Length: 199
Image (tube, rainbow, N blue to C red):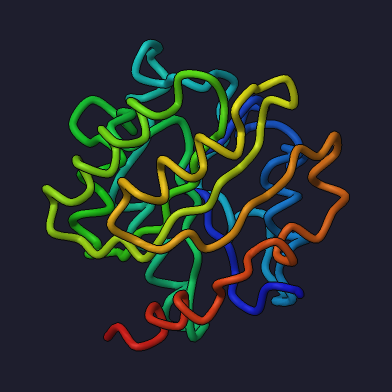
């Protein structure tokens, strides 16, 4: 299954946006869609460090620019999937967390959970924070990031019972995910059609 909507990553790393457009994460997102989009359309900023708020790089992030770039995509495509990274409350700059921006944009949310020891508390706190915004949580995806994780099935079962949103799919541990069609593991894809009904 290939993606029909472009995937937008507002910020990424580890290459400077003044350098080559060769960030593997961004290229993987571009290659996973069937749409003809450029690197700059898929990614407004690329930085050397993941936690920009700890560096002066965050001062360069202009939320208005990100909004304009997203608006360009939404005007030209039926739906756009926006990638979030590093956590719901991660700062984008000195004034905005990722959660602030998503709330301003009134986006529905799909939560991707990295399944590992200790993920239960973090996941349930994130779900609670999302629910407190009033935004719709469409569902969640289990991403098995630690092949040595014990009690994998039990963790999935517990989270399924605690999260008031459907499990959309389970991605197994994959050594080189950029070489795989991960969409094949999203088994409850009909739930995501909700996104295309939003005005």
